[in-house]
Image 1 (tube, rainbow, N blue to C red):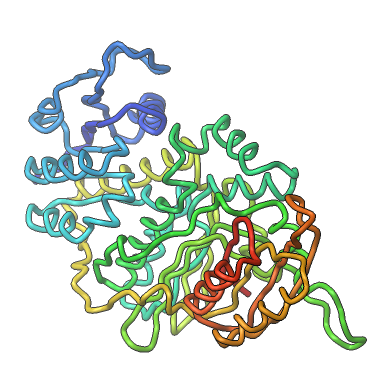
Image 2 (image 1 turned 180 degrees about the vertical axis):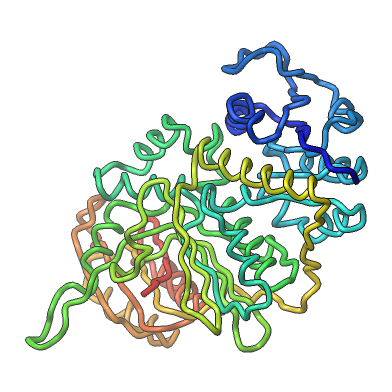
Length: 437
């Protein structure tokens, strides 16, 4: 391919992030040798905040058949559309950039294969972490024995938790604030139910261990069940000094965490859940819409990458970073190797995840309730580390109990909490959260 100084861009989707890309190309594209050749939209009558002379089209063929389009950027937010557009771009000998983490969680292996077959490049930095260059970090560690990836990959839910704890807002109030700031989509379900975070960590795990994992094997725990009481109690756990010479603990903060951890038997443990994070852990200090992801390898000190992870600016920045990189590759005739994702790792059964746990429930305030509780724990081989009881704001007949356990499997705690329900001495919602030190 001959050297082409100006790279033509075809943009699919002109919503929040698409609008940011249009603005960037309008203001800085010429200086970077980039020109927006066509913008595919679904509604030409919609009012838009950017100029009306950007070669808008409702015909996708104008993107894929136009010779001047070298790189296609897909920002529809719809997995099926993103999948189709990726295949069309590669078949048309165009490079492809996407921000669709669902596409990459489910179909990275097949899309990488399509790109390799057609000799094309693919950019996906914007799928995880917003403005933080997590994909570049994984490329840096190519060939290293990665032990784990963990952190906070969803800035929207981290913002909600920050506002709840620091401002005393309810979950609904904090979510509304995030919506007002356009930190979540109009339908925030994928964020608050943990699906967005699950797709991100599955894709990262697939890259880290060169294996296409199935997101359906992981059921995420969303943030909707976490209350201000949980946050207050977490901050107290471990801080009370019971003996004169006993070191006071740091307390905990609740964060929307993901973990992918290599086991000794070719299994990868993956979970997605709010978690109690020790205040000695740097992740406990990550606030608002910030993302923070940590990569731990066998041969080096863990590295942590932190930065804005939600909103137009962060995602636009990641898309533009991909665009500049792929444009440079195209000018120089470079095809970047893509992972095969044909490794032999498998996901650990999430119920077998072992660690410390937090359980919150409401126990009937009658004689024998504590004894029954202890019997249930004994049957499931659970040992209490901390226990706090408080008044239940919903009923004078119950006490709110907050318990943490020494290391156990998730299924031990879940089965025990389910058996507690069957005793008839527990009411209201309960929640089980992992603890990260």
